[in-house]
Amino acid sequence: MRIQQVVFPILAASFGLCSVAQNLPSLSPEEKAIVAYVDANELASNDMLEKLVNINSGTHNLEGVRAVAEFMQSQLSDLGFKVQWIPMEQVQRAGVLVAEHPCPEPGKCGKRMLLIGHMDTVFEKSSPFQSYSVQGNIGTGPGVNDMKGGLVDMLFALKAMQAAGVLKQAEITIVLSGDEEAHGEPASISRRDMIAAAKHSDVALEFEGTPRMEGVFYGSVSRRSSITWHINTTGETGHSSGIFSTRMGFGAIYELTRILDAFRMQLPEDNLTYNVGMIVGGTSLHVDEAGNNATATGKDNVVAPVAYASGDIRTISNQQTARVEKKMQTIVSQHLPRTTATITFGEGYPAMPPTAQSRALLGILNQANASLGFKEMPELDPMKRGAGDISFVADIIPGLAGIGATGEGAHAPGETIDLSTQPINTKRDALLMYRLSQIDEDADLTKVATK
Image (cartoon, rainbow, N blue to C red; front, side, top):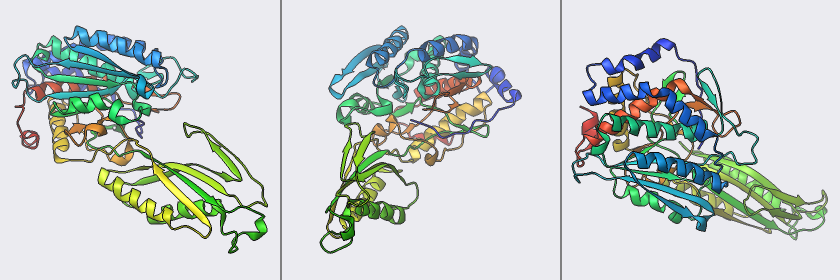
């Protein structure tokens, strides 16, 4: 989902650290080999990105999503993963790719890792934004940042580990969904395999975008929820001269207006946003099945008997979601005279609250950054990024919510990636995974992060 970020130029000298990182004394021989592989294969990485971006894989282009899955399956099979394609026609989506790299000696491969990503984009076949182009270090194309650049980071981090001879001693499960931008419902089906994988993993690493603001890369340990709501109101109808009377009451539009204004006044709290995305009312209305288009009829001198509004709420925890939904239901129930109102909530995306274990993962990532000569990544304010798949497993295992590509303009025509950051993100991802594979499966991450 979209990351709110502002990308500023970084002095070329700061990137000079990348090429000398392999000479730093804090890198082991295996880690130096990882860094060397990434540096030597930067052009190959960029070529792969172009191939992936030029495959249209809008969420509802099931054939295109499957084409990306076939490409990823070939790459992961070559790395020794056992790959399975799981169709999802029952939720009207393409499917899920699950790849498993088991430990050759169970219990001796460190932390069991779940790598999360998605193969779809928001740009359907009907979008005019279809092709990839490069100007200098900036690549432009549909889904280049969200998140095909992240898929390339993942693959080349794994390739670097294989080249260094350390992938064989890592236990990794990869789950790539074909519908992250608009997940199939119910989630109990569309996210079934991701949740199952989390139950036999120790940490989750999501390869969505690595944010950068004012030249500083940030780490994400939390993501807010995204829950849709829908309100229907009704009222008496008749000549407008009777509005507010005992017989006529206030009508459906005033009832809806009361509710929305009460939301504005009564709901505010930390880490919560609530948006009204569409509102319609009149003597009749129709909302399409997808909830994205509506029509209404009405007259200036007729009291409206029906009205409708929809929007979303975003919260930092599932407990906050439950609390806010209850407050919204209470507000909706306090009807104006001669009106009724109901509110329903969609399934949406759950929240990923920050935890000590997830913050410890960021600490371990920053240890890798220090070894590479990169600056420390501060914790990202969750208000600055949207919802994502990792939240479906956040109540099972700790995780990092974005260690993929860096760019700007996600979800909008003209979306870009900064190609000069691809080796940076790939190196720290590879070192993070390698170091997690060296940590005892039962070790407390908070203690490891403070060493």
